[in-house]
Image 1 (cartoon, rainbow, N blue to C red):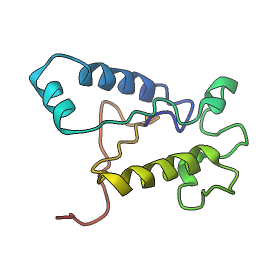
Image 2 (cartoon, rainbow, N blue to C red; image 1 turned 60 degrees about the vertical axis):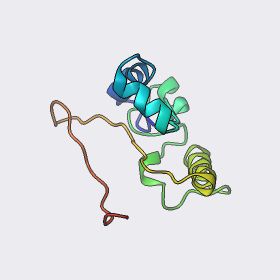
Image 3 (cartoon, rainbow, N blue to C red; image 1 turned 90 degrees about the vertical axis):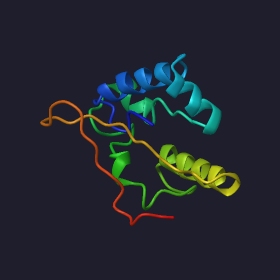
Image 4 (spheres, one colour; image 1 turned 45 degrees about the vertical axis):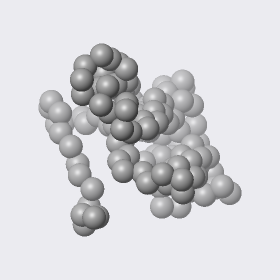
Length: 121
């Protein structure tokens, strides 16, 4: 998923590149398509993008800071919908990876923040 923070447009470019790669003809892309189901959310925060916000949605909230509190009754339907969707997917097939694409104002190049949870078997 990309563009929780509307001003991080590089997330859209990476998401597009990743999508094109996964749809490509390489052996690796074909392997991934054969063995995994990939769900792509290209823009988590379209309202924030449309009105030109840098970090927030239409309500002025940073969606990336609302994952713990968002539910169906919250003011953050974007996050609540994705949480519900992931839970439904996980009910039928185990979700192995969630990749949340961001940009950074000071770090150059590419970098990765990993999962803080212990390894699962």
